[in-house]
Amino acid sequence: MINSIKTAFDQGKPILNPDYLSEISEDDLEQILEGNTTIPLFERRLTILRELGGSIKDYTKFIYKCNFDALKFVDCLVLRMPSFKDESEYNGEIITFNKRAQLLSSDLGYLLGFSNMNRLTACADYILPMVLRFNHVFEYSPKLENIITNGKELPSGSKEEVEIRANTIWAVELMSRISGKTSMEINDYLWLAGNFIPETQSYHLTRTTAY
Image (tube, rainbow, N blue to C red; front, side, top):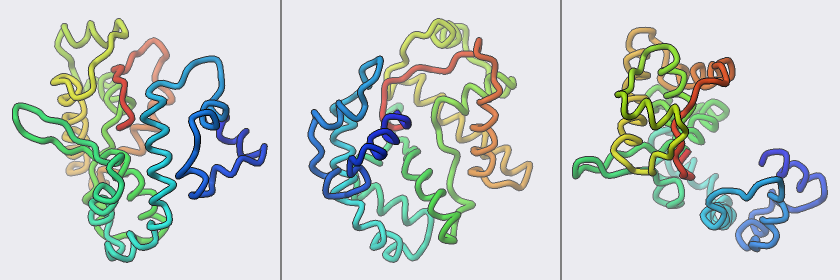
């Protein structure tokens, strides 16, 4: 996907132009992402790109409105751009992750000196749980182990998927308390460590744009 975007940029496609993104056609996006497979959740990704194009001009307003505060920036982002809203229901309660919003807040925060960076949580995706499982921080039930090992899909918002993500955040929080590093610093370390996990190891498969 990244290579496709770079190719489109090299070919003169105005993919960094918010006005273009806000009205990008289905045909244009299909052409940009053309490859040897169909991009999953294509319609959802098209909607997200259009939303991004329509809102990206407000990023500077977000930053000043949120007073360069990492947590407030996440809240502003989720409120202004619903595609960044990342939550699930679990036993009648709403569990909030906001993985992509926190990641963007972290990236901008390092560049712009946001406050409260130490209060961002880990970004619960699929790489971090795989690393934690490989290093015996996680131990799955036989049923869940079978699902993941055999490449069966875990539905987005399912009990098991929410538990994996929530426990990822809690495990990293405990590491943060022990090490003195922030959750996001540990998050980045674990994500990079995923590059060295043997290819025989599996991660949970969930069809989602949340991560």
